[in-house]
Image (cartoon, rainbow, N blue to C red; front, side, top):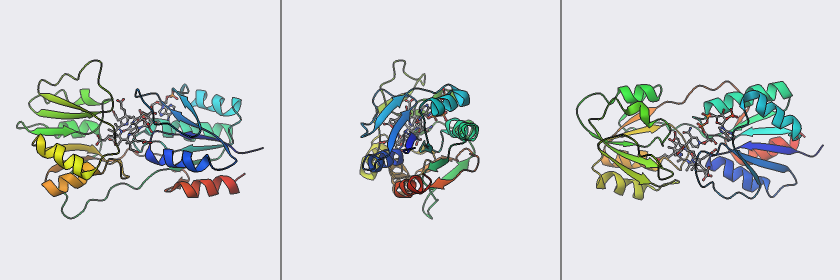
Length: 246
Ligand code: 3Y8
Ligand code: NAP
């Protein structure tokens, strides 16, 4: 049966894989949750929306004759990754993850490591600061216990209902970002603390490099643990895996 691939997308790695796959004979679909208004154009078929849990994903795999699943979601999309592991076990199709190594602290970095977003919010107790919350839109409410700060919020879309911080500024922009852009942004708003996820990859790293140059402390949120699965770190290896695991 010809290879019929489902890529769980939402990252630059997923986009790179979609471009490589479009040059092969493989059938392929890239999938998105539908979190934001505009999704990057892709050279392969796209589907948008949840599957309906593990059972929904398993039935999607079976009814669409999926032969391989590649989980190229963001390292913090832990629920999707967990569902993919279980659905592939149930349908007995091969699964591989395509991800990127986490950022490693450099000597000049000033990082305060926290295990999750809740702990990052708790780390903001104390005197008023000028904080860049560079973690998107979905978890901002967890920071509502610390309204004493000025918050610079970077969001992909203009929010219908603005977040409820009394002292906030919303920067609507989507990555990939550059170090020059982020250095200017942090200096212009006199940011003295950044909250970031250890996303890995290049597209969100600009703020970390800018923080190093400007000697700004970063509250770095560590990645959620995801069960073991076959993992690749570049799209070429995924294409090879699919061609040999026919
Ligand atoms: C919907 C649509 C590509 C993919 C690009 C990558 C890079 C740019 C950097 C900062 C950090 C953040 C956020 C971020 C980056 C890439 C990648 C990445 C971080 C899009 C996309 C979707 C999403 C979902 C969105 C989340 C949000 C997180 C913004 C597409 C643009 C903060 C993660 O408003 C919302 O609901 C936003 C939700 C999940 C985290 C959050 O909790 O709010 N990504 N981002 C995907 C879907 O519907 O399935 O893929 O085209 C994709 C990208 N965002 O091919 O160019 O590879 O990581 N995305 C973080 O790292 O902390 C911004 O501002 O410095
Ligand atoms: P999550 O919490 O792990 O998943 C929650 C639910 O969203 C899943 O159970 C699934 O719903 C649906 N879902 C997630 N990713 C999907 C996909 N690619 N295709 C179809 N449905 C998907 O996910 P998340 O952290 O919200 O991430 C959502 C999307 O944004 C993913 O594509 C991810 O790669 C991208 N993204 C996330 C982050 C981040 O910081 N979390 C950063 C950059 C990009 P059902 O159970 O109904 O199937």
